Length: 235
Length: 128
Image (cartoon, rainbow over all chains, first blue to last red; front, top):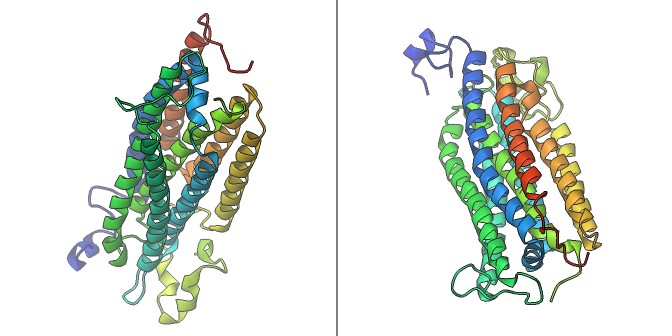
């Protein structure tokens, strides 16, 4: 919060090194999109590894994918989409809200953030049980790994599929955990009226990050869960 | 000011506090669509596409299944980028940066796929 002395010299919510809110907003979003370009390349490397090995060992990838539960994957996709919408609500509240002594949009922002954390938690809890099942079935890469299907050309290559499965979903889940941590730290400034119609750049920028994480899952779901459904279950 | 005059805007019930007259008026970068309802319909469309891609997976399409799933995933990602991430409302500079990220990944995969799909002996799709 700016003090009253500062507020008279500068507009509320406008950092002193910016001329206008529009300039401040563009600066904020330019940085956020550059960060997300970096994220695209970050996940892109893993997707490239996936495509490479998928073409080299198509049967092993199908056998690996068939060990995953498509229904749980689809349900988790819905859950994550819901979390994106509660995030939209928080951004909408930050954008349309206004600041007075008696009322501000902070509670609405917090409501949106809590909803996002709620759906995000459901997603991660489901993922926890999915991981547990893979441990129980000896599908975790390493010494204990047992190829689930022996009749294919490269049974051991299924281990590569599960390496990518744990690597990609693990990195995705890590992004969600980081995001949920940031949301916890957003609640106090939200309630103190930090974000209003002129400056809601942090909330909207964070929303971009959360939607990006959603997009990553939108691609992980078919790449990991759906490819196995191309053919009847291998044994 | 008029941007915020939608019926589901909860602040209007507070107009009696005497602040409503000037508190909305500072949006220098206005002209945004502040309604949440269109994005709710996009959410329903995303639900629908998720159900479709799940339904398609129940019939075993063979190699075609990958293509169908990928097309639906690209459609879903496009909906999120266009309607949730507000690229349309961004400035030209931000648009260029945003598009370049996705352009880079397309270029990356174009050359990767052109290489590995043309190597001999890598098309033993099970059951085909």
